[in-house]
Image (cartoon, rainbow, N blue to C red; front, side, top):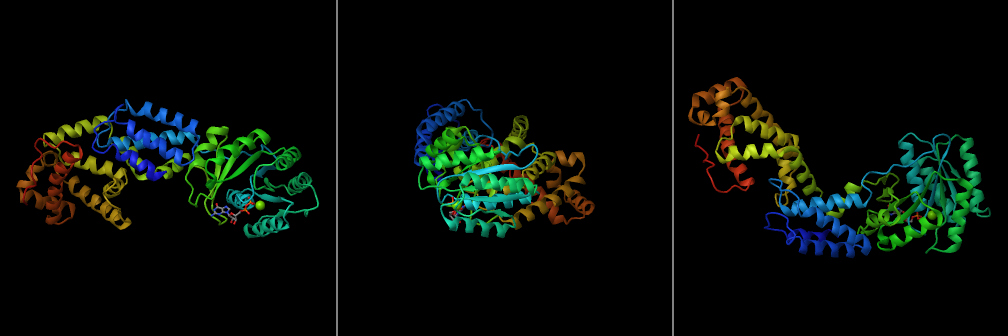
Length: 439
Ligand code: GDP
Ligand code: MG
């Protein structure tokens, strides 16, 4: 999916704004990428329409390229498609909450039982597991072993008792022990069949669960949509858990579940370890699908930090070469708010990766700059030329800020460099930016 979308953005290279015409090709690529990722056709159609509508008529954000803007729109539509917000687990108002897990064989139900109890434990909730998969003795042993591993009691009643009866007894036991949550593991089948659904319905009747969660293997792709629809119609699910996201899944399952069932993905599993279960964040998933989390946060931060008026004011100053130390300070501070300049640079594709050490260095040099600007007079701040021309002034600033003259000279040179760089960044190639004075 990621590489398919990559070519969508590439179609916009060199464009100035998004138009009805120039988004046709990228939208075709997006459509193809989604279909290839096993997202169902009606979902793809609605999605592409929603993105197109937004893309045309989106305003220009200074410093953000059209392809980056389209990434942002696709991202927010993906988030919407996956339900927008994080969907928390529901718990009973009082007494023991019941979580029933269902799903095909091998999707990770038994593993999820243990992971979930571990997850709840970290939130301070006690839980008990119930082994209601009676078809394979090994399944019971597996649950017992995993339960031991996470330090949670497991209720078993062998393979001779009906699953609904095991579930009922297990719930009794959990209530007696005043458990916050009881998690019931059920048997899966290789594919959906009537006996599995009947069995689940019986277990459901015996338990009156707070949550009925369908465990879905992320690798299932397109089939996930049909699976979720069927389970939801037959037994009525409250949500889904997507497992094996650490694998080589194409993302289609994550995109379809909500749209076809109206039910949210609540949790995701991304590994075989017991702590590999976490809430499902639609925005992070969208970022993962796009493989462009960095561009997204860059666009968001640029929007946030560079309010339109500020950007225009700044541009005027740059064009008239009036960018002074006050602006420099404002700029470096807002950049600091963005996480530091080098980090932002690292977010721009093609600028390369930045190491934590480089970030620390950048932050340190910001502090040094600030201390020098603080001791400048109002006049000096507004007319950097004064400092460029006068070694006496530079000497004074060095003394008052406790820095070397060389550092002051560097700062002044940097300001003039910044004038030029800002000019380029804004795409204002004509006009006077000034040269860097020799100090
Ligand atoms: P069940 O038949 O639905 O109960 O599935 P199991 O819980 O027995 O899991 C089947 C296999 O999938 C086991 O080998 C698990 O270790 C593995 N598994 C479960 N969840 C994950 C996951 O999130 N990532 C990976 N890589 N493997 C998983
Ligand atoms: Mg199992």
